[in-house]
Image (tube, rainbow, N blue to C red; front, side):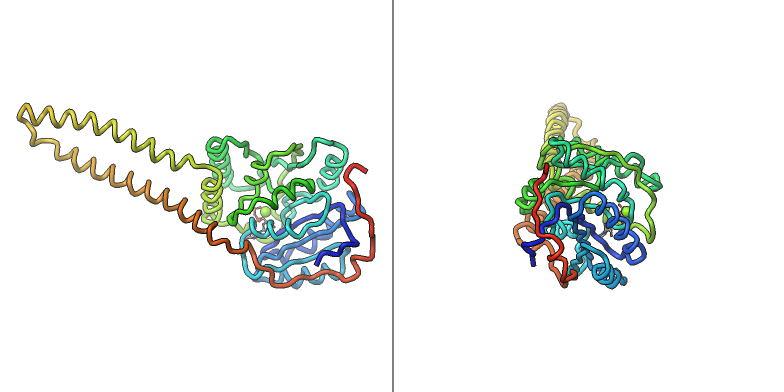
Length: 329
Ligand code: UDP
Ligand code: MG
């Protein structure tokens, strides 16, 4: 329920999945820094179907701390979807999205808000990772390969991007008009355009628990992103097909020549090799097409992105302030 009397200037959206150990610490830090940045702020925590006591912690925090609201999704939908839920819920003139594990330092909030207020060019203030913290080498290499590929395949710049961002209200409203079911937040924001200002930050180690991303879930995210933002893999099938066609011409000519000159029996190895190579090429092509078809099917079903199970919000919130603010006031 949107309370018309209370319009915050700043919304902070935090997706949380099994974050019981550090959620309270995070909310305290975020509340403190958001309060320094703006007197009218709200913090929206989206509990992404956690299986630990994240929701209980969140309920207590929402009762105790100013401006904290909670939404609980009906199951684990994944971070991207949890972000969607939070963004749709946010009412602020500026919305900051950040992680629940303090890897996105809350000290940056004041600076982001300051940039957004003073710099008319700052529709989006984007946090750029300076050092990828203590991430293992494999993950760093994986991220580099993925963003490199995505940048090349889509023509948009992705490198160094993080999910720590401040979005102006008009960006959030524009984002809400993108109807796709399978979302890739970073990609959508890049696609939207608008004017972006960047601030660098160091990624500290996770404040507790361990990363929620397995290799498989990261690979799935990468695949979704590539399929959603690029048709290059489909075109690649055509290119490979063309190469095979050229080969077919050459080999065809040679075969015919040999038949006419009378020594046609050799070349059995060639036949086997050709069968194997072409067979795998065809199957890879089919599966590539299959991935796109599956993505289309998912979109066409048109199911809601997420379902909300319950909410928590302190009743008195609406009475605190009745002003609605304008951006460069
Ligand atoms: N997260 C979520 N749903 C998930 C997985 C993660 O809401 O299914 C949240 C998580 O609670 C955290 C953020 O997404 O706030 C980033 O997750 P994590 O820190 O595990 O990712 P990493 O920093 O390792 O990329
Ligand atoms: Mg993290």
